[in-house]
Length: 224
Ligand code: HEM
Image (cartoon, rainbow, N blue to C red; front, top):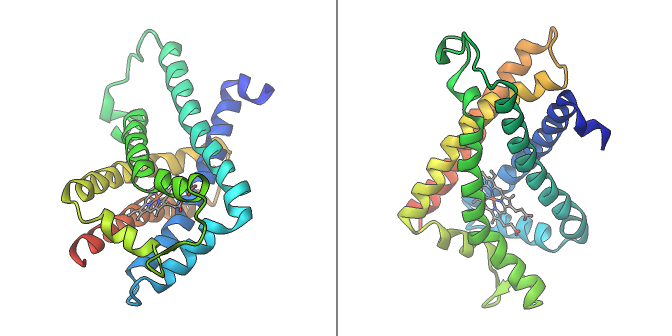
């Protein structure tokens, strides 16, 4: 694809995949936050069952999402490698904190921490789900006559080690988003009179969503 051959094209594609993942994360959060509603998981169970069995979600949106996740990681590595080889001789004035933020210089590391989390997260939730539905062929969503999703979620957050790993990953996620959101707006040229508003919005999202995920993990750990 021609677009991906130029440096600007790659940054633009990276930004588009980032926006897509940020939209996914928002809907993922909106569904997961219902698991702390005081209705014993009824809303969360209903939404999870719909998402887990709806044809459009399973066969169209899910493959697009997986493609988006893989694309973002692969493109992130390519951009990092190209950036490094483009400046074999370091910037004379690249003296760290003085002219760039820690977050912006370490996107690859916060990204790798999130990748490690996604692997753990898939082992925890996604692979068992694929196994139940696509290998065992059980699309009922039931266990002992009840929708099973809420109990499975509660069960995962019993382990303090897992909760700690999740919380650390969400802190990395916040750092990644704090730089990533602004950088993505910059790459698509959103650098105008709305910039201040976009920056404020980015900050609220970048801190609010990870903190919300931390609250969900801790809530289930301490309320089982
Ligand atoms: C406390 C926080 C979180 C909880 C409780 C949670 C819960 C879940 C559950 C239950 C699933 C399985 C959905 C299914 O396939 O039926 C899932 C899938 C997934 N989660 Fe999370 N999640 C959390 C945070 C995150 C974060 C921060 C990310 C991204 C950085 C993420 C990325 C994903 C992805 C990519 C999938 C696969 C989506 C799919 O195709 O189903 N999750 N999560």
